[in-house]
Image 1 (cartoon, each protein chain N blue to C red):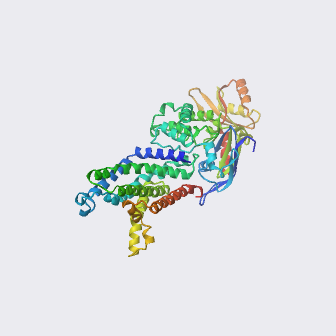
Image 2: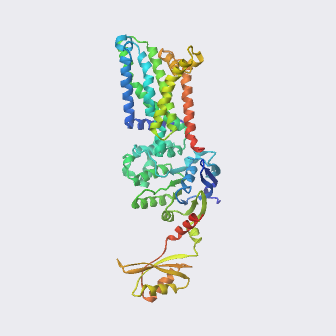
Image 3: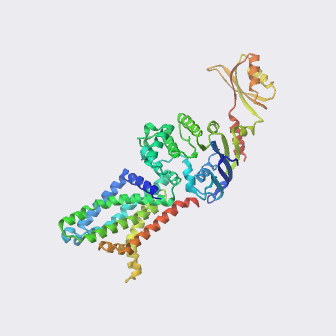
Amino acid sequence: MWKPIWTIARREMSATFDSPIAYIAATVFLVVTGLLFFFGVGGADDWFVAREATLRPLFEYAPWVLAVIVPAVTMRLIAEEKKSGTLELLVTLPVTDLQIVLGKLLGGMGFLAVALALTLVFPALVMALGRPDVGAMVGGYVGLVLIGTTFLALGLMTSTWTHNQIVAFILGLLLCVFFWTATDALVKVAFTDPPAALQLLSFQTQFASFARGVIDLRNVLYFLSIISVAVVASTYSLQSRHWK
Amino acid sequence: MTAQSVIQVRDLVKRYDTKTALAGVSFDVNAGEILGLLGPNGAGKSTSMKILTTYLSATSGQIKVDGIDLAQDPVKVRAMLGYLPESTPLYTDMVVRDYLVYVGEMRGFDKATCAKRLAEVAATVGISDVLGMVIGTLSKGYRQRVGLAQAMLHNPKILILDEPTSGLDPNQIVEIRNLIRDLGKNHTVILSSHNLAEVRQICDRIVIIHRGKVVADGTLDELEGRVAHTHHLVVSLASTATAEAVTKGLGGLPQVKTVTVSHTAAHPVAHTTYEVEADADVRTQIATWAQQQGHTLVELRRKSADLESIFQSLTLEA
């Protein structure tokens, strides 16, 4: 079960880092999160002004940046194979479509791991300068891994829908930004005093407790369910060749 | 049908939205033979192969590979097959060796087995000297060999090759054909082609598909026997006699129906070429006659149009 998944994941990782897009995406991620971390979007957010030993600005802005760069990395996962025809060889190897999807997702997580590892300079800096809440930092990173993987799964899903990488990117970007902001914004537009059940749907609400250092199983399960739905949808999308 | 058939295809139907790609295709593939799927473009050859390799599913019908129902256990069937799709899709940014190791691992090989098979297969298809190169930089002929290498890496019972020589230059075509013929000694091979000469050279048996149906199925001899009532012969003679006299002489031979002058040439040997239609293969009679008449025989052959004429008669009118 796991061996082909791991084989596909390894190939995806080396393919990702063979192409310039991974380096561009990782650089953009580091630079933009860095700028936002240090200077924020307004004066009050300025890290140098606030003089607070916290990673809060990082956890506030990193999901935005991930929502943009993750689809740029996932767009090729299936769409490229569809376009070049290699998908035909891949799916006729003795593996299931689910194994292919999981392998691709795991490969994408390799990129996510590298991108997030680059941001470890921020906690290092904060630790050197002050006494931050380590629990909040760990929680925040767990949250970033979960939200990043959710974006990966959504991007992977849009990549199975088309053989055009640009289309996959735009659809992935829309979905990620939608899930990150609109669940929140829509809830607030629809209700002045949103019911608790609806607030639970929001990515931002779900993510917020991680940034406070609370790793709540319910929040984890929330992201895992979205990832599972996207994985199942991707698998069905791959299988749709049989009944089209 | 026979006990040794490894693939049984029964009443295969494939409908896309509005188009029927396969309208009830049935054939058998015997162990160890090279079967040619022949047909004009769009006849359903590729669709048949995509279904055989479990890439697509049939709308209805049944396929058994080595006794296993393809619909029941596709993953097990995939393990028995090696597949080279049309136009040889490969990861062009990968190094040949890395790519083949990847395929080996996907096939469940451990490192040692993988390295051993890789070396064997690379030697068989002649890519040992390009293992360190990036696939995208290889010539079309070498890519085709890499495609064959990935298909046969796990020493599969059955090789399915979709138009394996299309897009190659004449030298590469000869090389790949020889390679496939060698592979046919140890594997069951199904290849598709719209090239009659290729099928004639490589295949033991031919299934002709046209508009989603099998219109002929048999060995080359059997198929040619179907139109054997007319034999087309080409005779080239160097002679002092006039073309009219020779035409008359040839026409006087038993069982010869028509004789036409096709062309005359001065170089490199001055000769006149005649096309003869006869009810039997009268090549020996023509040779004897030419010798008796004092004509010098430059060329005497059966026109290789016999399979072409079967193909045309089956696919044009049907």
